[in-house]
Image (cartoon, rainbow, N blue to C red; front, side, top):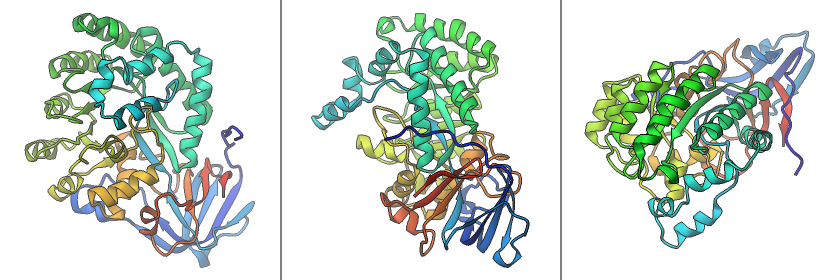
Length: 424
């Protein structure tokens, strides 16, 4: 397979016409509760792209003249590209041996205690040069884009020492520069305790708060700070120390929590003004009520990871019916969610968590765009936004897309307004 290349920004005026439906039109807003069913669609229209940006849209009969290039959508639909606000795509190697271990009955925690999981990834990543890590990560980024995603949050957390964590975040910065795509970087040094600090948590916490965070902030390498708040990983007291230091250095908190237990992480995240609480496979009515009172902290749900690990899915239906707005993401990583495709996430959200297709699509586009503060760039179809788009093959209606999981329904993935990045 030939390596994918970053496409140049489309120059001049490109007209896409004969579009059955333009989905998610307008600047959009973060949607909550009943509003998550709202999905503006313009039927039988055209879309105009100029120098890589959306320049206009309207009814087919009003298509403009003076165009440099015309693309016939042939009755396909156009959607904004997906926005993935939880990924770990900078890693060294896959962990398929652990997949077999779980089939044989080992739990995630048992694998971690044997030096597998996150520690396994860290040991392998420390051996790679920055250039080697960048080249493999760029291909993963572009492969993710080929499945429909054009904006990303990318976490560190597979280094677990200062040199390696900085290396990962420098790679994320290079991915942002080379791809030109909207990317946010998250420092996740509190992903697991390194083996050498397994019995001395306080010493590793001091490295995180007194060494890593100040240096990351000084170099401008991260937007956010995350932690894995779970039994056997980081306690609420430890994360409280971490977030206090991170906030003092301008890093906004996000939090992995409630994947296996009621860890107390939701209340802690809210107290620190975290932008998100991620996973929530375990989440009760009291915690949902707490999130309703904290609209700035979004539930980020990861159904592919839950499915892959055989966990209960988060109570997404209950959350929306209570009035919450949710976000869906891939959790793309080498151990527990080795699939970057948010079209699979869309299907799982509908089949396993009982979301309507429109609700799930809002959770994959406009809601994560707001969560990453990219709402002026991506997440919907509006003049001035970047032209990262999905052109589908002809379909009966929108519900066919999550219904047809695994089928190649993307006709073209358009990046930077360039329709030649991926054409099936």
